[in-house]
Image (cartoon, rainbow, N blue to C red; front, side, top):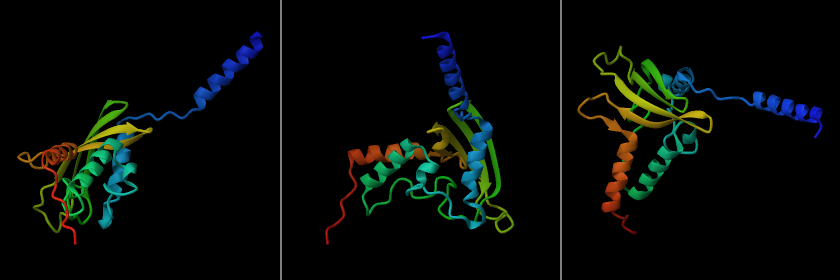
Length: 183
């Protein structure tokens, strides 16, 4: 090939590579992701889906696979391991107050965030102890997703969503959930 054609091809390849958007994953982008997640809880919002078609916008596919396997293994008449909203660590909430998020990246593909907040207005419930979650984020398809949530609000009962699901599945493998009685 003539040198001019090789130079043109090299220039074309360089321009193409430089024009591909990169998805720099840093603490700021992880925090922005979590702020967007918690914005769904403001003003008595609906929260984010752990079950349903939009869950993959927030949760890592491996966590959703565990959740789906657990729901299936438990059957329709039994309560799955996660029966509350893992993002707020609650079943009921009036919104999110005093949200604080601190993020540390472990790598461009993984970050840990300490998130604290109150699920009820402190004016109405001044003695409410804040919820404190450690959220592990992992990049999937170029975007942050929740890989695990560790609720360490109560040091006597630290709970990991991922471990809770894994433990329930292991238990159900040993002792399957009772089948529904047929009508």
